[in-house]
Image 1 (cartoon, helix red, strand yellow):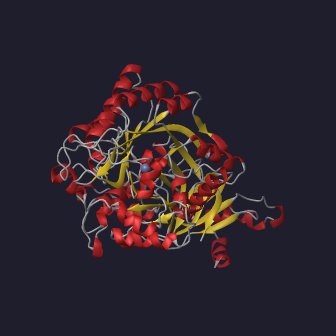
Image 2 (spheres, rainbow, N blue to C red):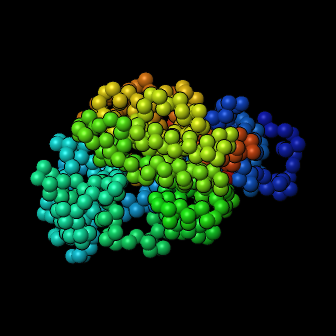
Image 3 (spheres, rainbow, N blue to C red):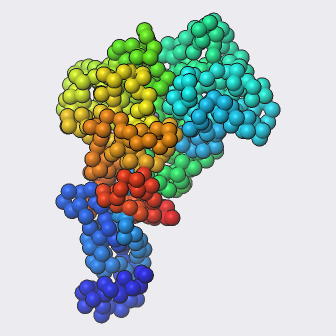
Length: 563
Ligand SMILES: [Zn+2]
């Protein structure tokens, strides 16, 4: 096939090339890509050939010229006729180590009842030593008939007396066995910690579900996950998964210093190819001063690794009713969720970040959490006279927004970093939590884009699947994940069109991570981060979109994954 194509293009080659002796020819560029190309660059949106050398895009051209440019040392990648080569995917919010860890823990995503979860736990325990911890994640009570939190008794029946800790799908609640509560010293009368909740039943008994900051009580007694080799193994497993799916830049939405150190080791050993824009987690003054003791890392290891962003939490999540709302939850009177970090702390971190050149990325989901974060950013910008600064502060999730706050993003130049797949997973129960009135302002991409914002898009994996293709489907259709495969969209007027959705997975992500001068589009001089897929995401059916297959992933001109 390749030689036939080559013959067909020979007649188009300049005669000087034909006369040249092969052994005298220059080795040629590193890589040539032949076939349909979708650049996402307005100056030349479509092409049929790419010439790549020394990690950069040399030429965007046609197939014949790309072939002509190839030399004996050039690798040639062919794009399937039904597919395209496009900019590598930037997942703008996911958890690198979490993706790796989840791959070796009990996976409860999609379980349809507490009993089904318990059956999986029982099966898992069969392989475990008698006193080992049972650790898993992925359950959601929203998929169950009675949409209620589970209880510890269900786990006690199957754990064989073992401590058990199962994180909710969003990572904002944990379901534990009685043995776990005992180890953690949580008695019936234990007070709720600030920013968290120990769930109790009508009689005031501790049920075995702990939300947000209350999870720390459990984490304190869980086996530590700080073995450097284990961290490295998790990171490498996550990298493999990311490259397989076509992700070339991974924005890690909150890593601890030990993980970042291990990541740096992997880069210096040339074991990491994936680019990572890391947010370092800050949850108190001690971790803040540790970060601010040094300058940000802007582009280490051939521009593959940056640590210039700080991750803060303004509130919890909607599923576990920790998201901080302006008014009460529709399904829990007199409860408005809570602040995790105080707004004054967010403001203080933002001020220091502005002075030292750090980016601040704050998790905020409820309308109150989002407003308080915008307010805190605004006060910090005022106090430091930084309104003209290219700070690229972000709000992660920005799920529920009050109408008045939407224009403030543009005004303050705050980037809403959102996740298409959260809308379609959460959509079925969001109106239960907040009522229809407020649900109109939920996952409001259209309103934000129309107000002049860009939206870096992520999967928040392991909360959701890491697949950018599933995310693309969610973002453009807003079809909810409903039982029996029914098709119903969550406020379809807020959809992104396909071009916007592709930008949200590429160029807008580069803007959200300070790399839009070299990444996120296919353009001469840009970094050669490319994904070759088997469908054209602009032209294919919506059904095909969620099933796009990756043929090859290229980072800095190197083929790092091939089907
Ligand atoms: Zn996250």
